[in-house]
Every structure is written in structure tokens, then in C-alpha cells.
Image 1 (cartoon, rainbow, N blue to C red):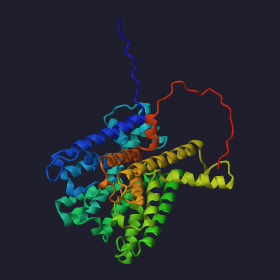
Image 2: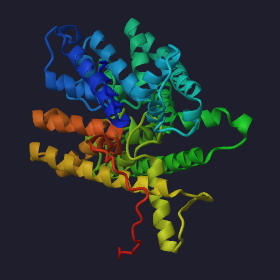
Image 3: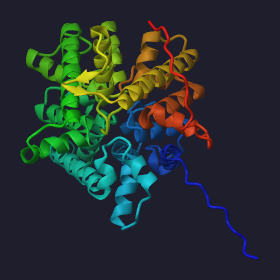
Length: 449
């Protein structure tokens, strides 16, 4: 009598995503632990390599030691591949290569891969994901070619690798750099080619594929989508706030921009106002920032970049929905409106969920990390935790002083920030087979506020 095999259930998309990132991180950790990855030829510390691999895959950029001085060219190449995969998205790569090989994707797989995109991804996944990879690599190549005009004359053959590394790091908002070979990126704070090339790469990665696709095709469709309008408006708004804060609060601070001539102050303030929210590539030591600037930057890092981008945070669109909801409630409106559009209930509920879960994750991580380093000011610890959660990468040196427990907490924080708190919680949820869709429940009211 034939034995009937029970049909295996497909893995939840959320768990598949987390498992994918975990596998990449562990493979990266193993490679970074090898003697060939370190400059002194010794085996790397597992926890430190795990921290570095997580930071790279989650495009965070927080490090426990300097990338150039610690890792060989092979190790730096491993880090480069990790934040390239992490920046474009594990699922984007899997989808692209599956489609390239002619393999069909299941409906749930397409929905998972398109979670940060629009319904277009569900209709034309082949074109969408192939364009993401091809366009992104093209933009990174363009940035690398511009940087080569500076780095190759200065560093020879290594300048070729430096240009690629820094262009990809900036576009992926990864925050890693190998600029200590030149005394730090601050040594190029007066070079417009380097500063504005990195600035362009950070912006292109931070606004996301959907936005620059819309801008490129503007001549054909003659309109900017609602998503593009919100992203551009909020990005400009938060960048302006960051610029005013940095330029005014740090104008006389000799540890940041205080010693620069006026044109250089403006250029570096613009660069930091863009990089501080998402990328973490800095032309000066952020630990020298004034307390006021640290507070503002912490809030801006928490907000982060745009959806479907290489940046992290709760996203600028989430902040826009929060602002619109507050204004609508104060005005007594029944519906939430932004730029003449009525928001769907699902968007509002998801915004509330993202905000609550993100705040909860940051608070839990802050408490755990602060317990590990009680001697460090709380403001610096909060800055570091928010930077890790938002995958920004600006560091005040807190992570380098953490013990094993503290580093593992930061690893979990960075992973949660990259895949999203909703994804993490969905992966932990046990689905109830008995759904109560047809169950009628009484409707009631509750006093709030």
C-alpha cells in the first residue's frame, strides 16, 4: 500500500527573510574569522567578526575596530559583498537570479520580495527586480568612476578598490569606509568631487528605487506619484532641519566644522545633514558634536530614509503619516489626508504598529546596552542604539567598549532594524488555523487622551 506523504507547509515569508539574512551573516562571519581576512594573519574573534558581518549585511556601519587597519584586502572584499547584498536586499538578489535562471517563483515568494514595493512587483516581478539590480550597479559604477579620478592618483592600484568600496558603501548607506589609509575621510572634507559624489550616492540609495524610477520616467508619464511626492518632500524637510542644526550649533565647534572656512562649513554641513540620517559616513568625529546636535540627529536617525531604499529607520513616509494623523485629529477631520489624498486605513494601522514596535525595540536595547556600559553617558548610549536600529552607522565609540552580551544585543538590534520590527514579530507569531472572519463582534467606543 503506497504511503501518502504529508504535504510540507511552506515557510512563512517573514521567517524566510530572517533566515536568509542570518545565513548571509553567518557565512560572512566565518569568512571574516579566517586568517586570510586579517592583516596580521591570525584568526579573528568570533563575536567581533559576527558584529562586523551583521553591521555590513544590515548596512549599518557601526564597527568595533577600523576596517582598513584590521582587515586585509580579502576581508575588505568580504565586507563589500556583505553590504552590497544587504543594501539591495537579500530577496532582491534571490528574485533576480531566480528570474535570470528562468525559475518560476511562488505567489508568496513574490509577495515577500515585493513587501516594500507596490502592486507592480506582483504583476511584473521580472522587470522590477532586474531593474533594481542593474540600475543600482550602474549608479554605483558611475560613483566609483568619479572617485577614481581622485583616489587612483593618490593611492595607485588600491585607489581603484577604494573607489568601488566607497561608492557601494555610500549608495547602500552602509557607513563602512577604508579611508584611514588617508588619515580618515575628513582629509577630503575640502574636496568637492569626493564630498558631492558620496552625497549623490547616499541620496540615490536613500530615496529608493521607486522614486528615482519615477523621476527617470517623468517625461513619459508627466507626473510624480504620491509616494515620490511624499518621499521628496519629507527628505527635503528633514535634510533642511539637519543642515540648520549642524550649521548653527556646530559653527564655532572646533571639533567639527568650527575650524573650516565658510564654503567648507556649508559643504560639510550639507553632507552631514544627508549622511547623518542614513549613511553614517562622516567627515569629522561625531563624538565631538554638541549635546543639542546629538539629540536632533538621534531623532532624525530614528526616522531614517525612504521605504524600498537602502536606508533604515521607521521611514520618512511613516513620519509623514504620523504628522498627518496628528493634524487631522486636531482639526477634527474624520479622515487622514496628505497632499490631497485620503490615506487608507491599512496604512494608518501599519504606521502605528511600526512606531510602537520601533520605540519598544529601541528602549529595550537601550536598557540592555546601558547596563553593559553604565559609565558611558546615557545620551551617547541612546545615540548608538538608535544608530544601530536605524542602520545609520554613526558611532560615538560605544560599541567598541561593549562586552559580549552588549555586542550581541547590538547585533539583534541591527538585524531588527534592517528587516523591520513587523517582520520580526510576524516571524514569531503562531498562526491560528481557526480564523474568525465570519464572526460578528459588537462595536463599542473607548475614551482616549
